[in-house]
Length: 277
Length: 277
Image (tube, rainbow over the protein chains, first blue to last red):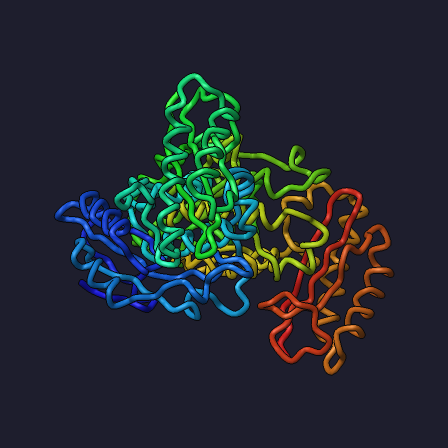
């Protein structure tokens, strides 16, 4: 497995086709392992699998955990190699962003719900860095986890609206025993918070399974479960949205998504579940 | 010479390398002819020269001349062929923009001067459509005219900040006898306006040649020439800016640009001249 830290070297790199990119911020866990193995399957024996590891400063807002975000490059490389990556792209922030950088890729519709209002500027940072990675790595396929479902929808929209010739693939969320979605931020939970966090999944499952009910009643069911089983958590949002537009829905007549964000003292956790009409 | 109107067909198209792109809005005149011939030289005998013709609605503001902007596709194709193009890409607006398009590429520094304040949203429209064309045509080199110097600087910045692997080349402005910069909009001038319009070039030349003077004194010289020789024109701006950052300068200590925009009844005209310290 090769490691490249230089943008120009990465752009010159050409290898077997197709090229599959799995963008990450490092601190890889078995959820990422699953993403990377999925990428390996998509690349096939003859293709190339690139994992980028870059903690992107522009997608963290003021007061968010950029400085504290975990870094573990050597362990990350071991995991990438074991999961079948051909190349790890690991640029420095100085190289990625000129001091006078002034171009932003912004999305103004799908980001109006869920994490958008809670994290101003976050999705602009995500779109901009992913556009850069697309132009640097020039993949044929890019894989993103469904845990960050809104991010996946926004990046699909970016791919469509800017005509990136890249197939954007969503990969299933990997969960710990008990159902908590794997996240690099789970390590910040106290043991009591970790005991309560699986209630997020339980609430979302109940919202998905409440056949015949409209969205407000489903959300109320979710709120009750969280209030009872995760009293240390403060709900940021609990919503049911259209799976493509991320717009709030009253009744589920098209593929929808139940999505949650919950603040614990240690970390803000998100999760979601797909709902069919 | 091939004409392609379909985005997917354009993206599938592969031809001899390098691919050189000359983006235009059509209504081609001999200034474009020069751009295209310059592109032909850059492509060489073995490369491919693509001219895109697309009147981009998103770069026209409310009250600007989108509907009136001249269209002359058959003549344009003749000129492209004579100037050595291999392919004309001519998509429809419906194909370029989904009804719910929601991604914008924005520049927030170089656009704060000159045409930026006069044309809100213009450069966002330019950056977004050029990013799309870059992803559709995937050129190695793209050629833009220096008449739209701020546009050239903004697109260089976009290329740098989004890591497009594309060499962005500026081509010299072509002028009519008397010095008026060629523009598709010149056809809208009355004969009296056309007689006065060369004063823009004369003012800029005087500003460039006023050795030892600072920017404010040079601008005053330019204003006096325009007041005297183009009384039908209303100055939108007359400025001296840094050639890379487009920031206003007081003294010329780095490569600079004298730039003008003048409203006539028939059309708003722009022009500029490079100044060395």
